Length: 478
Ligand SMILES: Cc1ncc(COP(=O)(O)O)c(C=O)c1O
Image (cartoon, rainbow, N blue to C red; front, side, top):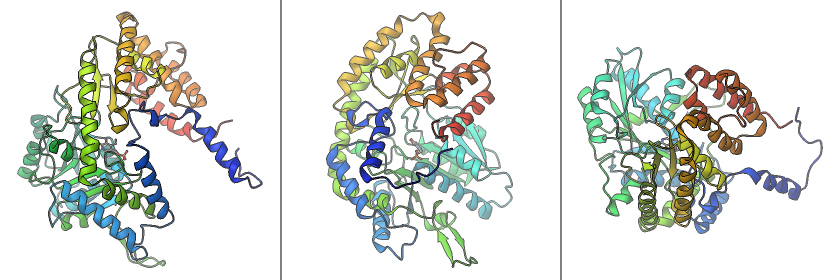
């Protein structure tokens, strides 16, 4: 059992141990990581660190104690609302991230329905299959029924299917701008019409796109309407720690009006510790994240975001053309901005991914259909040519695998990637479980989550496996 060290250590020893622990971490500075980190250069990074450090100790829990943080939050929310077609009525709060913003929108919808649709005892929220799992998490936490609706062949929310899935218990529809898996903007106007016809709520998840699509449109790329300009959109989530390039722990949840947001708040007036009021999920809120968000919005301004996104979109254009030119690979659907999914009808795409991993690229594997996920950011402008060269090479190698080997390589290929991201002790436990489940003998390095998910027939097994991984991840190394 790991215990606290009995004695103090020097500052140097502690920091050196932490630097060493980074060894196996994703090397995002090199533009070879296609998720998790949004990096727009060292000048911006330093500004974020400085702003964060200035408010490192302050706590956003009590706005009366820190009017500075209250000002920052108010202004960040106002600027975000203005960007997304809001007006004088639009209100919102900062949260710790997309998941918290979505939790809040769903919780507000539940409370709204309790007041406005009191006859509903088993409320449902309607999700296109591509919606982020944060909505399922919200349904799970708040005891709502999440109803999943298949999407179209071009990866958009299917309006006819959504219409058919609405029941008298439906309280909320969801659309994404864009979706995380394929980068597609759902038909927001049509979904909003559906919601208005039924007088129910409609949330647009613009977590990944809210701070990019408005600039992409200004730069001249086609972007369908997706924000408060569309009547019927009642709430929008937009993350600042994604394409606003803020420090992590920063998102905004917006509502069309105050009355709706009221359902988000929590108040407990009878506590011995005094009257407790909290607008969002968390109690203590790190002042640094709020301050850094304010800093980056003011530092870049519209001019800065346009310039950054011009570079990103030029990189995307290059990548899309380059990927589609590689035999056997194609970009799925018609992505609106900088989230791309690479699929293949001919190759084992997980084998391609494995080859890319071997070349130092960190790329997520997706399922239904198997594909690779790219979140293209400013950091990829410098690495795009190398990426395309490596991808062509990886595809050429994958082509050598015969179709008969597909199922096996799907596992082993993805397994090599998993070996790089999961600690060895978790990997070996996983290997044993997969082998028992598949009855296929222990694969050399076991299968990665997505590879396994694709190969295991029983979804319940997958669920148990993933729970095991979560369980083991926080056990200290022996
Ligand atoms: C569309 C979308 N919604 C929600 C989220 C969840 O955001 P977070 O990871 O900040 O909680 C993401 C994250 O990638 C996303 O892309």
